[in-house]
Amino acid sequence: MRRKAYPVYLLFKFCFSILFSMATVLSLVYHLEVVGLNALQLVLVGTVLETACFVLEIPTGVVADLYSRRRSILIGVFLYGIGFILEGSLPWFGTVLLAQVVWGCGDTFISGALEAWIASEERKRSMDTVFLRGSQMGQAGSILGVILGTLLGNLDLRLPLIVAGMLLLVFGFVLTGIMPETHFSSIREKKNTLLADIAGLFKINLRFMKGAPVLLILLAITFCGGLASEGFDRLSTAHFLEDTVMPTFGLLNSVTWFGVMNLLASGLGVLASQVLITYLQKQKAASRTGVVFFTSAGYILGLILFALGKSFWFVLVVFLITGLMRSLKEPVLDAWMNEHVEESMRATVFSANGQLNSLGQIIGGPLVGLVAQQVSVTWGLICTALLLLPVLFLLSVAKRTEKNTV
Image (cartoon, rainbow, N blue to C red; front, side):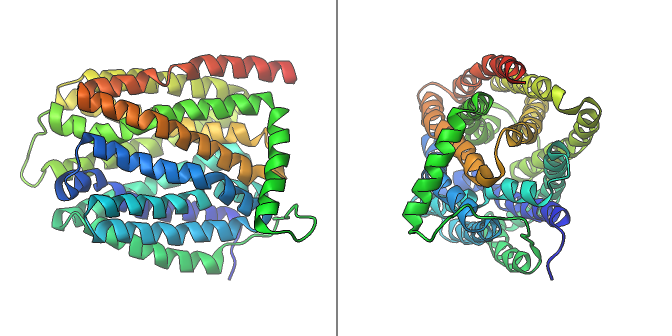
């Protein structure tokens, strides 16, 4: 029985976050301690993942706009499940790389399609509230996923990946029965081959984006965010393990600590998202630029302080604040972008956004990985912060451009 879109969207964000967090909360520890990867290999794992996302992002986004956003999301969930099972079952570097390609492909089917699907199905709702509420549900789901993943990881570091993968397959079948799609309308005028359809819609999107200067600036901001993402994601665990002394209290070992960190980050995210939802409902869309600027500046400063910190407790606090700044920025940026996109090409434009994020990570990841390997993890993280600096300039340009086009 199909349900209304908004509750299904929130259910998706909650359940998917549980399973994604369960699988990934200790994945870097798994890569370090079970697979035995070094600093460069850690970043290369992320680079392979982002390369797969970059190559497949636009084609899967176009398919979502041409055929079915719901179908695209379902395919993505199943591919995620298969990828996680593969990664946890065979702890070899080559298999881990292959798994990144599989669940990275799944990510491209969901990315863009999910945002386009809910924006089309719930046209009367404020997208600021929808995306932030979805982010909030995702953070709440992450809390449960972190707890489950940490408990399973203390038994065996492979279990969180395998169990989450199996449950994602079950979740995919549940979504098949309850997920609606009532407002989708393909812009296909006649039956062509898949490649012809993709090429046609891509040309339409390209012409549209050329005439949307604010959208182009927002896409550039996403690219810079990608440059600065991979280093923080991949090197933060190594920084804690190599540059700080993690205290132990009974069962609170290094594995459990990473679970606690993710749990605290998710809890902060839930509370901060609620505050931001209330603020934006009062201030309306005019405050978006300020929110994105503040969170971007906080992310840059937090990265630098995180990199330079040596005391575990100081590093922990800065790590939580830095992650919070990024998690608050992304849904507001998505809502801002949604206002500058036409309905018929939402999935493709959001996929282009995801592709630019992936391209940024492909470029930035190996760069900071080499710095971390040749110099230190600290300098790799500082380079990550510097890569995000252009965002502050781009936001001021976006604000001026938006005023001039109103």
